[in-house]
Image 1 (cartoon, rainbow, N blue to C red):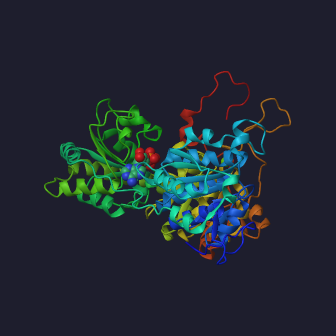
Image 2: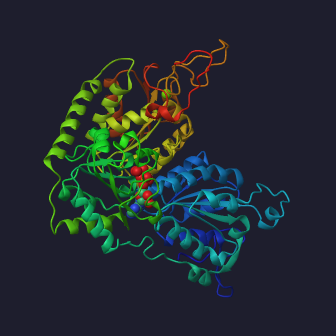
Image 3: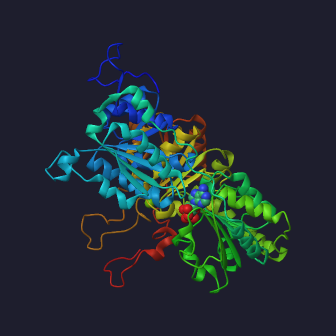
Length: 585
Ligand code: ADP
Ligand code: MG
């Protein structure tokens, strides 16, 4: 531990006569530092302002946001990128609630994150006597995260932080809430005793080996496959078992399909990638190996038309969470364990005898893929103005191809769906997007943390609607001078910019924004660079320049308001009225 002198104003420097003291503020910081936490994503205020000042003084990087949800999203994605819990700190009640959306989202996405919120006095909160920002935060957080703890005594801070870290990263990762009442921070205790109370977590996410029986069963099933498919999910990306995953794919010769945030785990340009033949492989495969991917809505729950003839599939699933098995359909060969161990066990088993999948299957996949890629190519070359999504994304695809180390943040409806398909990823954990909930609002939080954690340039491709949820953080990006280039696909509205008010009244449709807005001016307001572009060529040049300069930049990309479709490619989830009055667009 560092110097035992406490920094807050009530305490005095240690002398020979008085024992050295520490306090709650200092112990929280010491506990985090001891466990390798380097960055805090925060919004200051009562009762954590001094904590944040002290944390910065002690060498932690404190990134201060304009809204807690963005700070929380930053922490969550930091967790995904680093396998260490991302830490968000907020004030009590409203600040806590704002952070909670991100905590719930982190939990849903299996990202390790710790939300630490200050809270009001227990005695008053529990008797509901009307304290400043009174709220039983622990009770509210509990159902929305993996674990929730409250600390009442300074000597328990070390244990609480250790428990929070373990809960966040062990097994299936997720969000953890840590409630720190205001009074805790100023509690004083003997410094040596305080130092002894801290816990350095050993082996926070232990390897979990699959049972030999389950490996044998999976291999047996896999060997019988005529049309096998490997689906890589973001759990596989998170696991950082990149080499082991590559070995399984390449030694088996099985086509693979990456889920959105697993793109780049193996390059999208890999000969075995079936990304461009997605519909075909999902429909026609007979044995599917799920590697850190859940059979949730993003995979049509493993059933229905997407998956071809009923009963045509046999599933092998690798997951660290035993209860994930059989969640939607029967899993014939469950492999419970960490991705690295499970995948290595399969590869080792294959070394004892393995026949690659029939050329009939791999050839059919390649043929379909090439046909689809060829069909798409001319659309991506479009230099039309106003731009359509394909022309604009074709330009961005080149930018990313030329900078494979850059991180891509992506949200929106059409902007998301089309970018996911069009922009190839070349390295693991470079694509960060709306994840399991398909939630809007992750953009600027993710972009900030991506830059902070990786030190690499970040490209955020944002629908104009999606950008609005976190747009104020452009100030944060400028303040910390982060190498973030934001491209706002501005088509004047939600899905499209062409909806009208059916009554003919002066209020605009709820689906449109101020037409021809200049989002680039927002960045200029804070000293960053703003650029307005109307053609794919201009877009390509502006983004390339921004990425090379590392200067905070916002590019307003003018997209045809008629381009885009309702709810992107998940229009089927948006109920429409059979009796709606007025224009249907
Ligand atoms: P995607 O949306 O990309 O399909 P999901 O978030 O649905 O991915 O699934 C990720 C899965 O990965 C979760 O079921 C989670 O339990 C699992 N997972 C996360 N980390 C690991 C790990 N280290 N080892 C094994 N499974 C993991
Ligand atoms: Mg739009």
